[in-house]
Length: 287
Image (cartoon, rainbow, N blue to C red; front, side, top):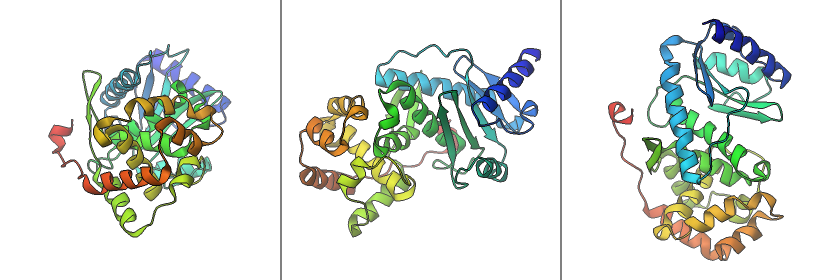
Protein backbone atom coordinates (compact mmCIF):
# COMPACT_ATOMS: atom_id res chain seq x y z
CA UNK A 1 0.00 0.00 0.00
CA UNK A 2 2.86 2.35 0.86
CA UNK A 3 4.39 1.80 -2.59
CA UNK A 4 1.08 2.61 -4.29
CA UNK A 5 0.67 5.86 -2.32
CA UNK A 6 4.25 6.87 -3.18
CA UNK A 7 3.62 6.07 -6.85
CA UNK A 8 0.46 8.20 -6.85
CA UNK A 9 2.41 11.15 -5.45
CA UNK A 10 4.97 10.76 -8.26
CA UNK A 11 2.14 10.30 -10.78
CA UNK A 12 0.55 13.61 -9.79
CA UNK A 13 3.93 15.36 -10.03
CA UNK A 14 4.70 13.95 -13.49
CA UNK A 15 1.21 14.82 -14.74
CA UNK A 16 1.63 18.38 -13.53
CA UNK A 17 4.99 18.59 -15.31
CA UNK A 18 3.25 17.57 -18.51
CA UNK A 19 0.80 20.42 -18.06
CA UNK A 20 -2.19 18.14 -17.43
CA UNK A 21 -2.69 17.41 -13.76
CA UNK A 22 -4.20 14.19 -12.47
CA UNK A 23 -7.83 14.21 -11.27
CA UNK A 24 -8.52 15.65 -7.83
CA UNK A 25 -8.46 13.21 -4.90
CA UNK A 26 -6.61 10.66 -7.05
CA UNK A 27 -5.03 9.19 -3.90
CA UNK A 28 -8.49 7.93 -2.91
CA UNK A 29 -9.09 6.06 -6.16
CA UNK A 30 -8.75 2.29 -6.46
CA UNK A 31 -5.54 1.19 -8.18
CA UNK A 32 -4.19 -1.74 -10.20
CA UNK A 33 -0.72 -1.57 -11.73
CA UNK A 34 1.35 -3.51 -14.28
CA UNK A 35 4.56 -2.69 -16.14
CA UNK A 36 2.56 -1.10 -18.97
CA UNK A 37 -0.46 0.58 -17.32
CA UNK A 38 -1.73 1.83 -13.99
CA UNK A 39 -5.53 1.80 -13.94
CA UNK A 40 -7.20 4.11 -11.44
CA UNK A 41 -10.96 3.97 -10.89
CA UNK A 42 -12.88 6.62 -8.97
CA UNK A 43 -15.13 3.84 -7.62
CA UNK A 44 -13.54 0.61 -6.30
CA UNK A 45 -16.58 -1.37 -7.52
CA UNK A 46 -15.43 -0.74 -11.09
CA UNK A 47 -12.70 -3.38 -10.69
CA UNK A 48 -9.42 -1.78 -11.81
CA UNK A 49 -7.56 -5.12 -11.70
CA UNK A 50 -10.02 -6.65 -14.17
CA UNK A 51 -9.76 -3.68 -16.54
CA UNK A 52 -5.97 -3.73 -16.22
CA UNK A 53 -5.78 -7.36 -17.35
CA UNK A 54 -8.02 -6.61 -20.31
CA UNK A 55 -5.81 -3.66 -21.30
CA UNK A 56 -2.57 -5.65 -20.97
CA UNK A 57 -4.00 -8.50 -23.05
CA UNK A 58 -5.28 -6.05 -25.67
CA UNK A 59 -1.86 -4.33 -25.90
CA UNK A 60 -0.13 -7.67 -26.42
CA UNK A 61 -2.69 -8.53 -29.11
CA UNK A 62 -1.95 -5.28 -30.95
CA UNK A 63 1.77 -6.05 -30.79
CA UNK A 64 1.16 -9.51 -32.26
CA UNK A 65 -1.14 -8.08 -34.94
CA UNK A 66 1.36 -5.45 -36.06
CA UNK A 67 4.35 -7.76 -35.55
CA UNK A 68 6.24 -5.37 -33.30
CA UNK A 69 8.18 -5.99 -30.12
CA UNK A 70 6.55 -4.66 -26.98
CA UNK A 71 8.93 -1.92 -25.94
CA UNK A 72 10.14 -1.52 -22.33
CA UNK A 73 7.53 0.40 -20.41
CA UNK A 74 10.06 2.94 -19.15
CA UNK A 75 10.23 4.49 -15.72
CA UNK A 76 6.48 4.63 -15.16
CA UNK A 77 3.40 2.91 -16.60
CA UNK A 78 0.81 4.88 -18.54
CA UNK A 79 -1.99 6.17 -16.25
CA UNK A 80 -5.58 5.27 -17.15
CA UNK A 81 -8.14 7.40 -15.27
CA UNK A 82 -11.67 6.00 -15.09
CA UNK A 83 -14.17 8.41 -13.57
CA UNK A 84 -17.16 7.03 -11.72
CA UNK A 85 -19.69 8.97 -13.78
CA UNK A 86 -20.15 11.22 -16.77
CA UNK A 87 -20.50 14.49 -14.82
CA UNK A 88 -17.06 14.33 -13.17
CA UNK A 89 -15.45 13.29 -16.45
CA UNK A 90 -17.05 16.22 -18.29
CA UNK A 91 -15.79 18.62 -15.61
CA UNK A 92 -12.29 17.19 -16.08
CA UNK A 93 -12.47 17.61 -19.87
CA UNK A 94 -13.85 21.14 -19.69
CA UNK A 95 -11.14 22.26 -17.25
CA UNK A 96 -8.55 21.03 -19.74
CA UNK A 97 -10.17 22.69 -22.77
CA UNK A 98 -11.36 19.42 -24.32
CA UNK A 99 -14.83 18.84 -25.85
CA UNK A 100 -17.12 17.59 -23.11
CA UNK A 101 -18.78 15.21 -25.58
CA UNK A 102 -15.71 12.94 -25.77
CA UNK A 103 -16.24 9.32 -24.73
CA UNK A 104 -12.52 9.02 -23.98
CA UNK A 105 -9.32 11.00 -24.27
CA UNK A 106 -5.80 9.80 -25.10
CA UNK A 107 -3.32 12.57 -24.33
CA UNK A 108 0.24 12.26 -25.62
CA UNK A 109 3.04 14.81 -25.49
CA UNK A 110 6.80 14.92 -25.01
CA UNK A 111 6.46 14.37 -21.25
CA UNK A 112 4.30 11.27 -21.38
CA UNK A 113 0.80 10.00 -21.99
CA UNK A 114 -2.43 9.05 -20.26
CA UNK A 115 -5.92 7.81 -21.05
CA UNK A 116 -9.08 9.14 -19.41
CA UNK A 117 -12.71 8.05 -19.64
CA UNK A 118 -15.71 7.34 -17.40
CA UNK A 119 -17.29 4.07 -16.40
CA UNK A 120 -20.22 2.95 -18.52
CA UNK A 121 -21.93 -0.38 -19.01
CA UNK A 122 -24.64 0.55 -21.51
CA UNK A 123 -24.06 -2.22 -24.02
CA UNK A 124 -21.71 -3.40 -26.75
CA UNK A 125 -21.20 0.07 -28.25
CA UNK A 126 -20.90 2.20 -25.13
CA UNK A 127 -19.14 0.17 -22.45
CA UNK A 128 -15.97 1.49 -20.84
CA UNK A 129 -14.07 -1.44 -22.33
CA UNK A 130 -14.92 -0.39 -25.89
CA UNK A 131 -13.61 3.11 -25.16
CA UNK A 132 -10.43 1.80 -23.53
CA UNK A 133 -9.64 -0.32 -26.59
CA UNK A 134 -10.27 2.70 -28.82
CA UNK A 135 -7.98 5.02 -26.87
CA UNK A 136 -5.31 2.35 -26.34
CA UNK A 137 -5.17 1.88 -30.13
CA UNK A 138 -4.46 5.60 -30.56
CA UNK A 139 -1.66 5.29 -28.00
CA UNK A 140 -0.24 2.17 -29.65
CA UNK A 141 -0.15 3.83 -33.08
CA UNK A 142 1.59 6.87 -31.65
CA UNK A 143 4.25 4.70 -30.02
CA UNK A 144 4.89 2.23 -32.85
CA UNK A 145 4.11 3.83 -36.23
CA UNK A 146 6.80 6.06 -37.80
CA UNK A 147 5.82 9.76 -37.99
CA UNK A 148 2.58 8.89 -36.17
CA UNK A 149 1.82 12.53 -35.44
CA UNK A 150 1.49 13.05 -39.21
CA UNK A 151 -0.89 10.17 -39.84
CA UNK A 152 -4.01 11.14 -41.81
CA UNK A 153 -6.93 11.34 -39.43
CA UNK A 154 -8.92 8.62 -41.20
CA UNK A 155 -6.39 5.86 -40.56
CA UNK A 156 -5.80 6.90 -36.95
CA UNK A 157 -9.51 7.08 -36.13
CA UNK A 158 -10.49 4.21 -38.42
CA UNK A 159 -8.09 1.78 -36.77
CA UNK A 160 -9.20 2.90 -33.30
CA UNK A 161 -12.84 2.19 -34.14
CA UNK A 162 -11.86 -1.06 -35.88
CA UNK A 163 -9.89 -2.51 -32.95
CA UNK A 164 -12.44 -1.29 -30.41
CA UNK A 165 -14.60 -4.12 -31.79
CA UNK A 166 -11.85 -6.77 -31.65
CA UNK A 167 -12.17 -10.10 -29.85
CA UNK A 168 -9.19 -11.21 -27.78
CA UNK A 169 -8.22 -14.65 -26.51
CA UNK A 170 -4.84 -15.69 -25.12
CA UNK A 171 -3.41 -12.27 -26.01
CA UNK A 172 -4.26 -12.63 -29.68
CA UNK A 173 -7.10 -11.31 -31.82
CA UNK A 174 -9.58 -14.01 -32.76
CA UNK A 175 -11.68 -11.76 -34.97
CA UNK A 176 -13.14 -8.28 -35.29
CA UNK A 177 -16.86 -7.51 -35.14
CA UNK A 178 -18.68 -5.27 -37.60
CA UNK A 179 -20.16 -2.57 -35.30
CA UNK A 180 -23.81 -1.87 -36.10
CA UNK A 181 -23.68 1.84 -35.25
CA UNK A 182 -20.78 2.68 -37.57
CA UNK A 183 -22.01 0.41 -40.36
CA UNK A 184 -25.54 1.84 -40.34
CA UNK A 185 -24.20 5.40 -40.26
CA UNK A 186 -21.95 4.96 -43.26
CA UNK A 187 -24.51 2.92 -45.22
CA UNK A 188 -27.15 5.61 -44.72
CA UNK A 189 -24.71 8.36 -45.74
CA UNK A 190 -23.56 6.44 -48.83
CA UNK A 191 -27.15 6.06 -50.02
CA UNK A 192 -27.81 9.81 -49.89
CA UNK A 193 -24.31 11.04 -50.80
CA UNK A 194 -23.73 12.45 -47.32
CA UNK A 195 -20.03 11.66 -46.90
CA UNK A 196 -17.09 13.95 -47.63
CA UNK A 197 -15.20 13.25 -50.83
CA UNK A 198 -12.71 10.42 -50.73
CA UNK A 199 -9.82 12.73 -51.64
CA UNK A 200 -10.71 15.09 -48.79
CA UNK A 201 -11.14 12.21 -46.35
CA UNK A 202 -7.76 10.66 -47.23
CA UNK A 203 -5.81 13.90 -46.81
CA UNK A 204 -7.49 15.56 -43.82
CA UNK A 205 -5.50 15.41 -40.58
CA UNK A 206 -7.46 17.76 -38.35
CA UNK A 207 -11.08 18.63 -37.63
CA UNK A 208 -13.89 16.57 -36.16
CA UNK A 209 -13.42 12.80 -36.37
CA UNK A 210 -16.60 11.77 -34.57
CA UNK A 211 -19.97 10.55 -35.90
CA UNK A 212 -20.16 10.12 -39.69
CA UNK A 213 -16.45 10.92 -40.18
CA UNK A 214 -15.44 8.16 -37.76
CA UNK A 215 -17.86 5.75 -39.45
CA UNK A 216 -16.41 6.56 -42.87
CA UNK A 217 -12.88 6.09 -41.55
CA UNK A 218 -13.79 2.73 -40.00
CA UNK A 219 -15.44 1.58 -43.24
CA UNK A 220 -12.30 2.30 -45.27
CA UNK A 221 -10.13 0.37 -42.81
CA UNK A 222 -12.57 -2.54 -42.75
CA UNK A 223 -12.78 -2.70 -46.53
CA UNK A 224 -9.01 -2.55 -46.98
CA UNK A 225 -8.48 -5.35 -44.46
CA UNK A 226 -11.42 -7.60 -45.37
CA UNK A 227 -12.77 -6.61 -48.78
CA UNK A 228 -12.00 -8.69 -51.87
CA UNK A 229 -10.77 -11.58 -49.69
CA UNK A 230 -8.26 -9.37 -47.89
CA UNK A 231 -6.11 -8.74 -50.95
CA UNK A 232 -5.10 -5.29 -49.67
CA UNK A 233 -3.81 -6.38 -46.25
CA UNK A 234 -0.11 -6.29 -47.12
CA UNK A 235 -0.47 -2.99 -48.95
CA UNK A 236 -2.37 -1.59 -45.96
CA UNK A 237 0.55 -2.33 -43.65
CA UNK A 238 2.99 -0.68 -46.09
CA UNK A 239 0.73 2.35 -46.30
CA UNK A 240 0.32 2.65 -42.51
CA UNK A 241 4.06 2.53 -41.87
CA UNK A 242 4.97 4.98 -44.63
CA UNK A 243 2.16 7.53 -44.99
CA UNK A 244 3.33 9.69 -42.08
CA UNK A 245 6.34 10.75 -44.13
CA UNK A 246 4.38 11.20 -47.39
CA UNK A 247 3.66 14.67 -48.77
CA UNK A 248 0.16 13.79 -49.94
CA UNK A 249 -2.04 11.15 -48.32
CA UNK A 250 -4.16 10.75 -51.45
CA UNK A 251 -1.21 10.44 -53.85
CA UNK A 252 0.49 7.95 -51.55
CA UNK A 253 -2.78 6.01 -51.23
CA UNK A 254 -3.12 5.66 -55.00
CA UNK A 255 0.51 4.61 -55.33
CA UNK A 256 0.56 1.99 -52.55
CA UNK A 257 -2.81 0.43 -53.41
CA UNK A 258 -2.33 0.88 -57.18
CA UNK A 259 -5.83 2.28 -57.66
CA UNK A 260 -7.67 5.25 -59.10
CA UNK A 261 -9.86 6.86 -56.45
CA UNK A 262 -13.03 6.78 -58.55
CA UNK A 263 -12.74 3.02 -59.11
CA UNK A 264 -11.73 2.41 -55.50
CA UNK A 265 -14.73 4.38 -54.23
CA UNK A 266 -17.10 2.24 -56.27
CA UNK A 267 -15.66 -1.04 -54.93
CA UNK A 268 -15.61 0.25 -51.36
CA UNK A 269 -19.20 1.46 -51.62
CA UNK A 270 -20.45 -1.84 -53.07
CA UNK A 271 -18.72 -3.80 -50.31
CA UNK A 272 -19.95 -1.65 -47.42
CA UNK A 273 -23.55 -1.59 -48.64
CA UNK A 274 -23.77 -5.39 -48.79
CA UNK A 275 -22.22 -6.39 -45.43
CA UNK A 276 -24.18 -6.81 -42.19
CA UNK A 277 -23.33 -6.00 -38.57
CA UNK A 278 -22.14 -8.72 -36.23
CA UNK A 279 -25.11 -9.99 -34.16
CA UNK A 280 -25.06 -8.79 -30.59
CA UNK A 281 -23.86 -11.23 -27.97
CA UNK A 282 -25.13 -11.44 -24.43
CA UNK A 283 -23.13 -9.69 -21.72
CA UNK A 284 -22.03 -13.05 -20.39
CA UNK A 285 -20.52 -13.99 -23.74
CA UNK A 286 -18.84 -10.61 -24.17
CA UNK A 287 -16.73 -11.06 -21.04
